[in-house]
Image (cartoon, rainbow over all chains, first blue to last red; front, side, top):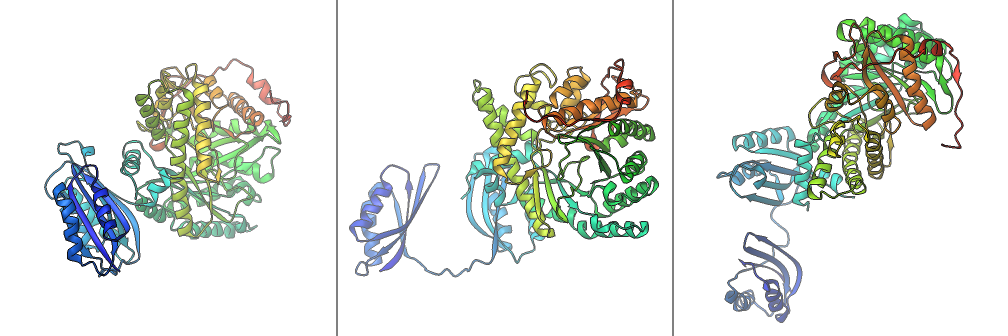
Length: 183
Length: 457
């Protein structure tokens, strides 16, 4: 048994998950994790499944393609790397939120600072609808900030970058959101 | 994973609705500083306050930045000085107030409370000395606050102390005549004073409290107002039951913020966490007003008919939400209606919607009492005492904390404005009826007996 990652990308419509999972079932693959997201019209699903040894990686890909290509879906299949090359350091969870008018390079600008400080993004939602209404142009990063970095230096760098990009930015410990909204 | 709505609504509360922690107050017991030797006593209180509070401001700022919630005020409350320093005469009490002021300045806090006495049943020598020292102490210090408890549901009202406080307020105003009687803004007369108030000017550390403790006062009138506005915009037919539910949920959120920040600060400075005071505390800023909530519920201004009912609903809903949010609730816990500190309430007084009598009625259903009420400078000590006695009676009978923070503004009359600055704001002086025989009544003195606590009609 070998763990595989299968990702499926294409225009959203009913029946995508059904088609993928049926093909996996017919090929004796056991699904361990599934997640999907949709951006505008585009669907992406990522599956982690165990595959029986007699079935090759290439065979699995071709059987998925047989079913999904006619639906206009692209498929990627690869073995799961069980232990990642990157080991998460001791960190605290924070949320970075930006509001501000759309322009080129906003995500690149903010994530460059995060990468410089070794900060891992655990979840990101960004919406840019153009115009000057800041509420229509929002980025929300959930990040893990390593305990070892200088928090003051990071905050200063992040806020300076946001100012350069014309963004109103907040960096807050995640607990405040859970505290306010969840019982 | 957090939802976008959770994150964006929190930001909205912070950026546009003045969500903050109004005060983190470090209570410090000074009982172990007591000493017959005056110099040693002063040295000990100075040393203890510095030792306990040295990091308070820094830690509050760090925690505020970490969570993105500003801690607006950092304060200290100490044991009642009339008890700790009961051996000393009035001039020494003034010197102690100055030492407290210096210690507060050195630690960077904006106020230090506890220059007070508990005299509901009678006065000790220390109590008399402290009360005698209050006018000079408050006039000659910047950050010292004083509270004197003159009544309780169990003891009744000490009318001799009430009269003494009328004279004390009058004298404090005279000593700061050039600043509109600002010393009186730092002096509260209480009934049923709680031992763990984080808010000034009433804060002190009660005798049953630990050696040091963090108590937190939350804010949030702007958040409550916006929540009501949104609910009414979404559903114009929302009734008062539904709006009460909205206030309750909002109070829950505000209280949770206070408790999180308070516990973090307490942990970092190594003292226990005490209570969250569930008060809706306004500031003299647009959008941070308790008075505006009355308008969101349809009234033209606080003070018009319907106001007492609105305040009762508001106060109760805040308590219900807050008590669910925190198991450790204390202090004053209710909506504040400080006339000068709330822009909208100040305007209502200025335009004549809010009279002293209506304010008094409002204090029957909320904390904390006649708060930051500017009165004509020629109001006599006896009339001040009579107003205080009325307010104490409300507290005594209803088993609740009430207080009077009255400012007879020297040289000014009803309709004039008094300016105190900063968080203390400004106030239009409201008229007082002076033809009522208060002089005779107040001079009767004695103690109004404690009320019966059954037959609650």
